[in-house]
Amino acid sequence: MRSQAANGDIFESGLMPYDEALSRILAGVSPVLESERVPLERACGRILHTSVVSAINVPAHTNSGVDGYALHAADIAEDGSARLVIKDTALAGEKYSGTIGRGECLRIMTGAAVPEPLDTVVMQEHVELVDGCIKLNYRYKAGKNVRHVGEDIKAGETVMAAGRRLTPPDVGLLASVGVCEVEVRRRLKVAVASTGNEVNLPGRPLPAGGLYDSNRYSLMAALSRPDIEIIDLGILPDSVDALLKSFNEAGECADVIISSGGVSVGEADFTKMALRQSGQVDFWRVAIKPGRPLAYGRIGAAAFFGLPGNPVAVMVTFYFFVLPALEKMLGITDKPIIPTFKARSSEDLRKLPGRTEVQRAIISRDENGEWQVRTTGRQGSGMLSSMSRANAFIILDHDSDRVSAGEWVDVKPFSALF
Figure 1 (cartoon, rainbow, N blue to C red):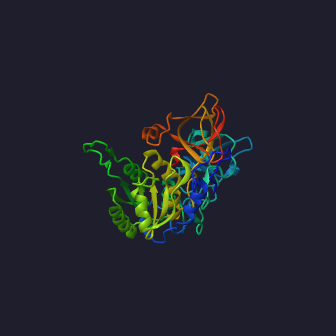
Figure 2: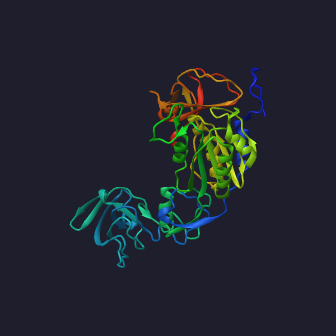
Figure 3: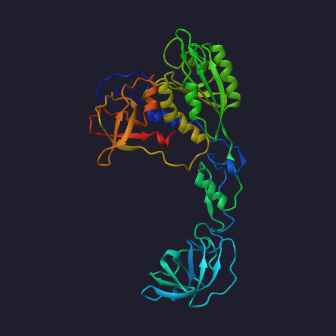
């Protein structure tokens, strides 16, 4: 653990580097083992518990990929010319039982079975109709526009592995092999609370010295996904006894407890005091800005995350620490990549070495097509409007110093997170 920066600046003793904190969190959580079967129409966004093996070939029969004419490739001359009699028509969903001889062709629709020994389909746009015949003057190779049985999926093939978070294309693929329900991980139960006597519900008059509860709403919005069940603990007062009661009750039914506020170094940080009395504390100070006062531990069987009280710090710590833990607990091992890529900073960025820094930013392309990034301006951790204006995070690593305009920085787009 590093507590001193490379340039000699002394940082608060006990701050844990970001990568170490995340590693400890991930080492401390395990995937849920329970599962349930759900209808395919409710499977999107759920985590596949059991791999799916196809019982059929896809396509189930050799068929035409276009509207056109099925024929013998040997009837096409080397120069691409042919004149063939249209013998009959084949429609999708029907089996054609006739015979097409040499010098003949079959009018065929997309998806219709291609009867043997026909081996090629020419597009209708490439032929001319003349007196019940087609005239072709277009070079075609044998097998063109023919989709062969099992060329996409073969019977007995694993079409989807356990641990995948199902996407709309995944649902369609499962339907294409005849699956009507799937075994998925049970939903993760996540309890969410805001803390503090100064915190008030939106829609009510704001008392002197009060503020509206944005953190719980941001967190519940971030958690609103099919694989998570939210338990709303509401706003908890600044009372160790009240916090202990609520956290202990949540620890009996939830997999994860997330609270915001009350975990810094002040004497009135009741969440930290309650956690000390009711649970196991791993750490609560991380070398990251914003988000330094992050508490992680356990209450009963539940993982506990005590997030900072400032709204932006809540969002940063959720996406950089809590979300990876939730995904491990959900058993996600196969998911779309959340990209981090390089962009040129269009401004100077200030940063002290010795901590990871996350800044709200806007990425765009310049006139040369290169990615460029600028901050949303002032980066106060209480300025939630800066998160709303942003479309990405700039990530400045633990040991980096100030960044000059024109230098490359790491960015993570919100589109991959939200």
